Length: 271
Image (cartoon, rainbow, N blue to C red; front, side, top):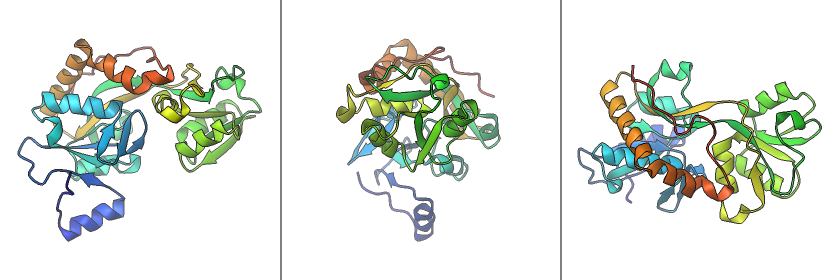
């Protein structure tokens, strides 16, 4: 892929936001710019010029149903803190990036879906049967990312947990494998994505006792009801023709992960 040419002012804004976009200079009217994560194994991961993960598979399927083949998709990095800005300023057409549907976000953007129901869970070493849920974390060394709501949730529920906050989930996974911590907490899909990586297969497991509910939606610009309905229909087709099951199994199955209650979900009506 070639980097899309943009004006110097736009380039400055993009660099300031820490965004990275890859696209085709010859994109036609059916080209879609889709925001994904670039650093989440099993969900949205960029390696060289390849993009893989459940979110990537969902986005590709939806795009094709909307008339955009995979080769015409421009993938744009969508850091969590910049997702609303990317949509509001028109830098992307949609975002598929573990984007939980919340009332506060719906004040700024609209959502199609949900296409997946995730939940906060725990990742532990495969041979550790002592941790079965938050209630068994008393005195344990729990890792999460600095400032994350996941860490705060567990600390409030289990005051006696020994919380250790790292800069990234990758650091937490490395600490877990090396026995520097006892567990890692965040969305079960993210945990399964790490556990499914080749270098960790057989070493880690998701506890499988989620204690929250996160509805992953596809973010679009506010007021675009027609696109919302088109995306919802594509999600329904992906579920009905078996492509949803295949995507989940291929991306998260190697970790022994099974989708929680409510999956696959039925998309909500568009506002």
